[in-house]
Structures are given as structure tokens and as C-alpha cells.
Amino acid sequence: MTTPVIELSDVHVVHKARTGKLFRPDRVHAVNGVSVSVSKGETLGLVGESGCGKSTLARVMVGLQPVTSGSIRHLGKEMKLNERGRKELGRAVSVVFQDPATALNPRMLVRDTLLDPFRVHGIGSEKERTARVRELLDLVGLPQSALDVLPRQISGGQRQRVAIARALALRPDVIIADEPTSALDVSVRAQVLNLLVDLKEELGLGLVFISHDINTVRFISDRMAVMLAGQIVETGPADEVFNNPTNDYTRALLSAVPSLL
Ligand SMILES: Nc1ncnc2c1ncn2[C@@H]1O[C@H](COP(=O)(O)OP(=O)(O)OP(=O)(O)O)[C@@H](O)[C@H]1O
Image (cartoon, rainbow, N blue to C red; front, side):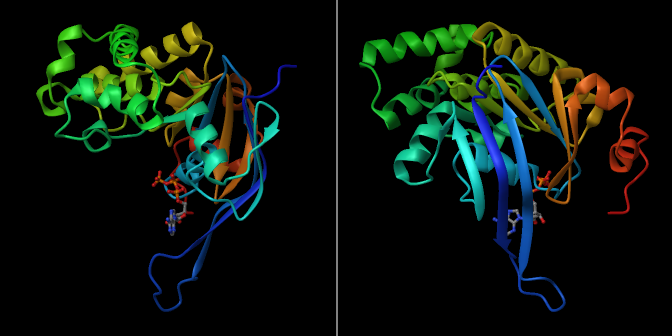
């Protein structure tokens, strides 16, 4: 078996609650003992309803969220979440967020948005950076003329392609796509999903696809993990989970019965 690119073991994250209302717990156990991994060339689908801890888990994987306990390994090496470890994880794993309208700087030309990761990490000469930026546009199916526009001058689907290009800039091993199509028009959702799948295959990436929609997760994933209240309650090959769910909550998601939780 190949070494997973990212492997989390028994990760816990406890947030301090945002408001200290009466009768409301002052702590939220957002991730409660999660062990999960993703390998190169594999799509792991993470499904669960709003508030179950998916985004917190995504932030852990990219090194942005300190963990209360548990370990994170990158290519078998345990990562300490100090400045160096965070930087290493941040290069190996990148994220595509839900809404490209807010994820992209509205005042930055696409060219500068794509050059930014190289500038921040001090990588390459100006000429090498420009060549790589042109390559990135090709990879995500955008014309070179897109370099000189602002995010608001292109469509939502094109903006998400820019966000995907930026996520690919530093040649990560893993891309985390956190509800990457929910803010887009229905008509362009399938195109963006197909682009992610094509890129995963072409570049041998690990892809973590996060969604509350189990049907989309099944369509895109090799393996699926179902999350409920900070825990993974079911995991396995996507078709198996979809066709023979063993957990009641997975069954509820599949039959689209509104959950009372
Ligand atoms: N920085 C934070 N401080 C305090 N509580 C937080 C913080 N981030 C998340 N939470 C809480 O932790 C729980 C899990 O949130 P998280 O955003 O990870 O879930 P999610 O499944 O991604 O939800 P959504 O799909 O709505 O983003 C929620 O109860 C949320 O309110």
C-alpha cells in the first residue's frame, strides 16, 4: 500500500464557543477523534450536514487549525504545527473554498492573484513565475486573456477556475475542495466538478471533496467518509457506502429524510 499523503490520527479540536450565552456550552468539540487519510490519485469525499465539523477538519489538514490532540502526518512524517510545519503543510495541501467571490481579492488582477503564492513563498524568478502562471491558466481551461481582468469581470465558474489555478500554483500533493460548487450556478457546477476530477488524474493529486450533498460526493469520490457531530460514523468505498450503508445516519442522508440533529 502507498503511504498516504495526509494522514490524521485521533484528531480532536475543541473550539471556545463564539458567544457565551446562558445555557450554551462554552466549548464546542468540533472534531472528536477523527482518523482519516488520503493518498495520491484518490478522491476522499467528506459528507455531513452543516456544523458537523467538516470545515474545521479541512483547516486541520491544511495546517491552519491547531489541534487539541492527535497527530497529522505528511508522507509518513509527523507534522508539528509550528511555523515550519505549518508552512510545509500549507505547500503540500491547498484549499479551494466555497465562494470564489470572497476567496479572491476583488482588487487584484488574475495575474497578481496567481503570482501571489510564488511571491509569498519567494519561489522562482519573475520569468519562471510568469511561465508557470500561463501554464496554470491552461490547466484550468482559461484563456491567457484572463490574466488582465479583475474577478468581477468574469463569471462565477471562471472565478472558481482562477481559485483552483491558485490552489495548484505550488504543486501541492493534495487539494481540499470545501463545497466548491455550492455558490455557483447549477449550469456550471458539473464543469467545475469534472475539472477537479481531471486535474486529480492528470496531476496525480489527492483530492478531499467536502459537501453536505451525498449525491455529489458519491459522483466524485473513490472513498467516502460520513461525518456527524465531529465524528466519522461510516467510511468505505463510495459505491459501497452508497449502496449498502451500515449506519443509520448515512441511511437518513441517503433517503433525504431531514435529520433532527
Ligand atoms: N473558530 C470557531 N470558534 C468557535 N466555534 C467554531 C469555530 N469554527 C467552527 N466552530 C463550531 O464548530 C462546529 C463545527 O463547525 P464547522 O464549520 O467545522 O462545520 P461544517 O460541517 O464545516 O459546517 P458548515 O458546512 O456550515 O461550514 C460548529 O458548531 C461551529 O459553530
